[in-house]
Image (cartoon, rainbow, N blue to C red; front, side, top):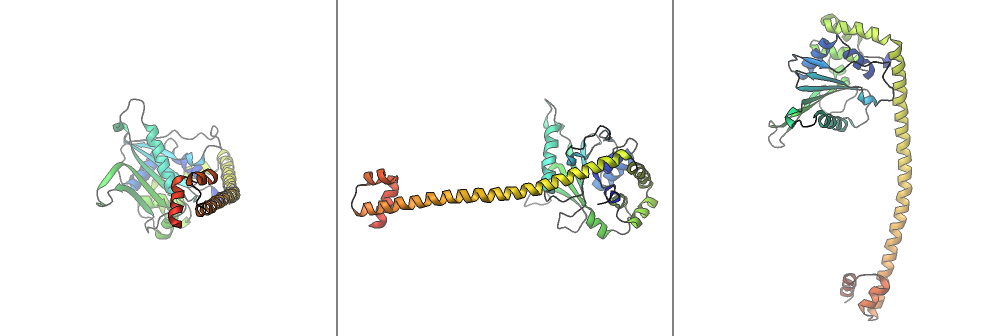
Length: 299
């Protein structure tokens, strides 16, 4: 993967630095308003990242963007370039952690903000045709009856967007054309039609020319590769250890079964010789109930 391929707006380092930058709140507000279909009257963006203070070994999934909208909604925007086959569970776990940590001491549950999780994915995870999907928790029988309104998950799948949209007419399509950064034609149309996208493009060009950003991205790419390699190797080791342990357990289990079958065989012979059950139990280790069942089987 080349630097040019890495340093696109959908790169989590670039995305967070671009949209958390002071003065770019209007861009983010437009994306949220168009994506969530809500009126954004007030927006508070988490403090922008200072690259010089940021540690490359931070959990890279943590490079999300947190925004308070209209004082009562927490919007989490997360970029995901690599499919680790756990996106839905990851989103659920992450939302739970945010909800759990949002209440301060002595606050009631009414103080919990609504949580909107937006996952922009560079891969597909859903079988639906739409590139943008929002979910709600509904009654299994009455599907239109929403049970829990305080949390929603949005999944935007860029490969589907790329395939379906060739002319970005809506503001959301224009922003996705910029974030995806795969079609120069669509990008130029988005820039020409949307002044905020044009501004984002200029900021993006400046940001990707910054040496600190490039160095951080190179280190993070290495960290991602190293973790993936460690995961793959760990999985292989786990399988090897699992097979070895399974063999040992199997041998022990087989030995136990064999010993039990031997005791049962001995007990049957003793029953045939009219040995009393108390004595048989003493020498075979079988309990009274097991011996009575053997007697009935042999009658």
